[in-house]
Amino acid sequence: MVVISTSYLLAIGILLIGLEALIFSFVLFFLGIGFIITGIISQVYVFDNAIVQIATAFVIALVSAYFFRKKLLDKISEISEKKEQRAHVSGTGIVEDGMVKFDGTYWKTLDDISSYKDGEQIEIIDVINNMVVIKK
Image 1 (tube, rainbow, N blue to C red):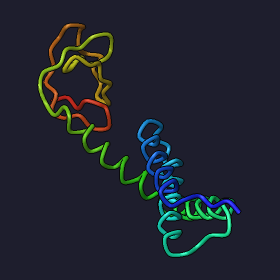
Image 2: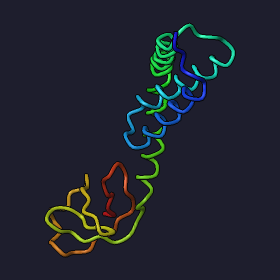
Image 3: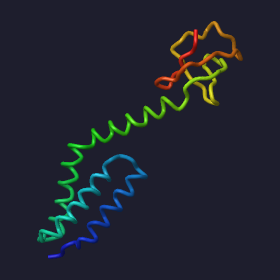
Image 4: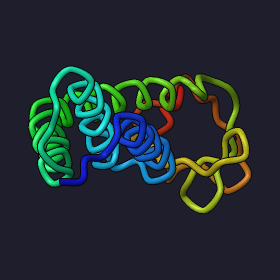
């Protein structure tokens, strides 16, 4: 029977992980991990045929995705939220059309700005969850 060589399994795994950088779904990542682990296993264990190798890669991918996908996504979203929240901290904004223009971007606010006129400057003390907090 035909068996996929270890170097091809590792190359497929690395290619899938590389493609994951373009798609960012964490499906190809785990499939790539499955192929890499199958390639490592094939160094020690001799598989009967290529179908068993591919099935092993898929099983490893499914098991690892089941246990680790949510944790990875939570960790990445936690990191990106912290970076996004702290990108703009404080300064002066301008009221325009019911929103606050600050650092070249229009922001919503939970504070009532209906008493401000368009073009009026307001002081911003923080940006939290994509909303500006204004000084009252």
